[in-house]
Image (tube, rainbow, N blue to C red):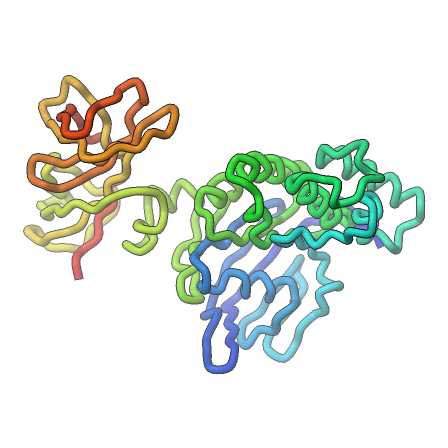
Length: 354
């Protein structure tokens, strides 16, 4: 059957655990997605993100907890709704297209119960949505990798799923194509109001694609937040080190939740649970350190990486600490040269030392 395009897609993961033998792969994970939300499970290999996706799809049973899709329990211990009954679309890393079928027949695979007129209308609609009008009679091997991924997305969208699952869908593409296609796919999913979960280890991809991100570590969700909050308000040191670029400088706690650094005194946004006089590690991102010729604070350029519009400078402070800074590329300073810098930080992130 073809599903009503106005039906919502919501997902609740309630205290789900899963194990393979004695190895605990998912450990009491919980999150909720509202209708039309695009989320990402982000983490290194082996953290459990793909297992979580497979449990949501119904390919794996859960040992504890429950998965609720559109208000219906899809999985709990001892019960698993069949994958084909879950109204889920999936796009895989390797596209999984049928090489012997045309683009149109690949898309039609999910529309087998529709009549010919409805099926053809939906195929043409999806070809237009994914930018492949005119490619209906071509075969997958005649298309580029990016075009094949669009066909895979169109096939998954064809029956109007309540939930879309994307398993590392852009990893086989070159960097430029990956960035462009991820933005295009996001726009398509938003236009279709499709609730989506992306699994990836690429944080740039996650930040570009998702409204909300769950950082997975050792089978648990260490933090669930917007990309902005993850970058500026990481929940622990491991997340701070994993997300973005940055270095830690030692600081000393003062009264009134202030921290003294070599670069000056700063107030903390959130309470730092350390007594005055205690040493803490303060996270500084490259965008916190600004190039300023008028600043009396000087730092020595020890390395630099050219990125077109900007350099990433590694700078040595007078006290020996090192920081990084994004500097516009027309400021081409030599290794060993001293430049003026100043600290401009909106969210101070600091962690007590164990």
